Image: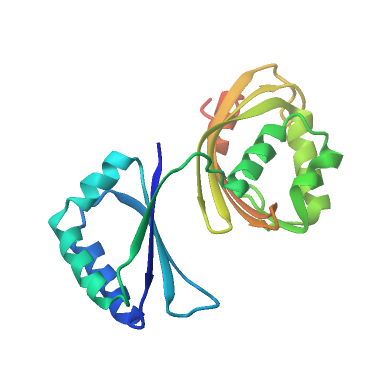
Length: 230
């Protein structure tokens, strides 16, 4: 279970504390078990700071605390604080990255959603970058046309293999599984079962996709359809 520790402190020497944290990161390289660290400053009290440190589990947090470097840096941090910092230990019981869920919903809808409804997942000024197109596809109408081509040529689903998120961006690694049921790039329907792996980087605005960059094995798909490698 993911574990989070909140460190609540007051200091008028944050620049020194920041340099102290940089030193801890350098000294614990290859040893520390913390996976994510955030420090927030109180907007109504510039001397009030809260640090949020994430670990894979409580046990990993204890391993991190027992590092000699952690103990040494902690003592120096306390000396920079206006009073003793307080600690809150939390077991994470719910953790949802909402843009990841929105990206998953988008891929799950592909192959099931009629082309005219694809815009429900995209902003009006959506931009699509696909290596098979010489220029980015602009807007929902352009994307409807692209999707209609795939939708008409294949019966398909996306399997989500992995996802990562940072800020307003989500990267999804996927496997596309399909049956060739209609003309594709001049190739008549073959009834062939095909698959393709790829990765899509997407940027979100207000919970909706505003930009995508696609990478996938197009040559491998054409080979499965009998166009390449003959």
